[in-house]
Amino acid sequence: MKVIASTLRKGNVVDIDGRLYVVLTAQNIHPGKGTPVTQLDMRRISDGVKVSERYRTTEQVERAFVEDREHTFLYEDGEGFHFMNPETYDQVAVPEDIIGDQKPYLQEGMPVMLSTHNGVPIAIELPARVTLEITETEPVVKGQTASSSYKPAMLSNGVRTMVPPHIQAGTRVVIMTEDGSYVERAKD
Image (cartoon, rainbow, N blue to C red; front, side, top):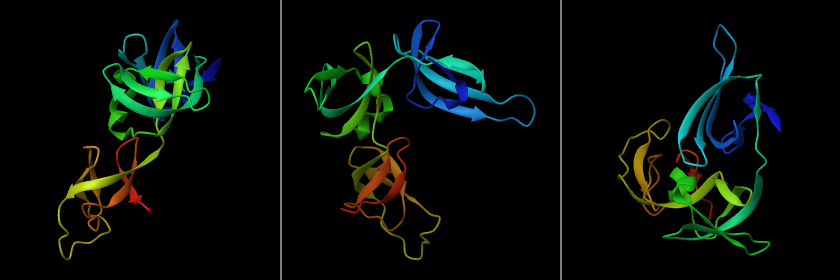
């Protein structure tokens, strides 16, 4: 099915010259002069090669038919990451290169959207936010304003992020899975 290039988002799968690509980033650029363009950074599904393409925002791009189903993350082993379809209880092993930089945010029992093309897993979409615990951070400095200053902190999954000064080690916080940024203190 043909779609306008400017409507493509991260995680969409497109068919270019008979090969499938998953969109890693999609950015609409509107220069002062000239026509607006859509910059797509994509990964070829067959061999993992990364490709950058530019389309005029009104150009048509072939979007591949992909089945999106909710799956539950079970565990990781030598074969890859194992997910289960909660309706049929079928299990799917997904290779690490498809998970990519989202690996630290995967948690046991987490619901994810798994995209498959002809039964082969090609892309994964995690929930937008995940709750993690702060394992270490710098102590609060007296007189430091909370409005604009952030301090580095280590999350329980090993990822570094920036948090407001009032957050201490042991605090559970909500993090955006897309870029690892702090959202708020967890309400649990």
